[in-house]
Length: 122
Image (cartoon, rainbow, N blue to C red; front, side, top):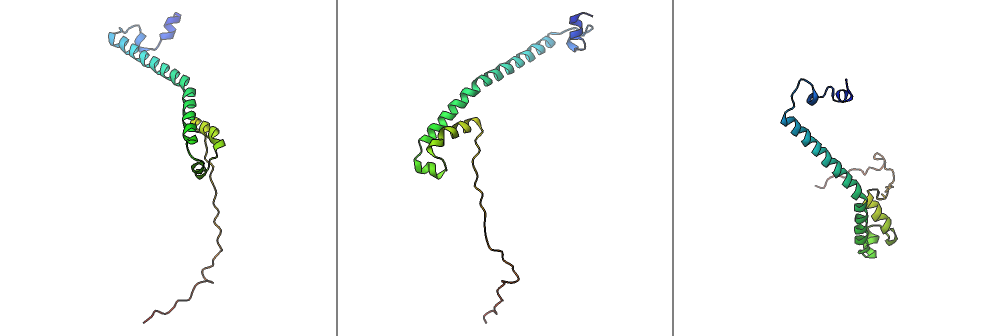
């Protein structure tokens, strides 16, 4: 067996007793075009992803810088935090800090503090 025979052994398109039709060739060519298009698309997305993040961060920073100090204080942002927040938002790594609320109330025992029932007025 030659090197070409071992590489194509078991593939239905290259079996020795099968004739290759035009449909088979067109199907292989169509699949090759689809695979090439997918590879080019992935390559372009990988190339433009960092540039897309930079533009998204700039747009976010421009929007936040347009807000007044009072509005920024309402949403919990200081003006000095805008560059880092806009970069984290563009990269998808921003985690908004959460406040934990603790409710403190006295322990009430229902049996000891129950108000006696009053008679209904006639």
